[in-house]
Amino acid sequence: MALPPPSPTSTALVTGASSGIGADLARELARRGHGVTLVARREQRLTELAAELHQAHRVRSEVVALDLTDPAARGDLLGTLTERGLTVEVLVNNAGFSTTGPVFRSDRQREMAMIRTDVEAVVDLCSIFTPGMVERGRGSVLNVASTAAFQPLPGQAGYGASKAFVLSYSRAIRAELRASGVTVTALCPGPVKTEFAESAGFTIEESENSLPKFMWLPAAEVARQAVVGLEQGKGVVIPGFANQVGAQFARTMPPQALAAFLARQHPALK
Image (cartoon, rainbow, N blue to C red; front, side):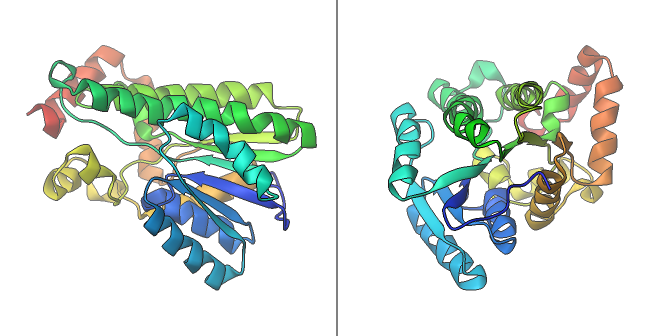
């Protein structure tokens, strides 16, 4: 099993745990006996989830409310958990969001906040927590990318590029850590019914009509497949057969032709 066994002093740190895939990843890990550290900005939601997990699974559930775009706040995480007597043996970089629309109409501050969350925080937290994993000779990292990582994504250019970075970065550090006892897995979900689309600026109708219904999966199922992938030490997990086929198709298409096709289909460009 590539996923380290739970212990009273170990924890699985899950970012973006206040809703959606992040909350369900925390549930899956707690169900397997892992203590969890829930990280996001919305403290009340984290507190409610922590209580749920402790009651259901009798695991230690920690809450750290912070803004992952803040480098100082990220840098304090290791010290905060050390003070609580906890060691991060599972790191789940799930936090992320997307902007929509053409870049020439973008909000500069929102675009940079996305990059700091989707890219910078992933790199920073891996840099902070993998040294301890390597020293102990065990650990698991799950970086949440997307099927958007496999092609350019007009209408969500920064988001698609961010997820392509996360996938490439995960594959690279997985190779670096291959003999260390630490595994790295990239999760590449397709469309999932969460608050993600609403926060990106899609209406419910636009979101549901953007891709065929058979490609959509519940967040709980995505989380289940992700944790099974962690247990098996997989390098990449793409939940759902339709999404696996779509990712393979995107790999074989000429990038410019695919980008032109996607630009015609994206609701934020119509």
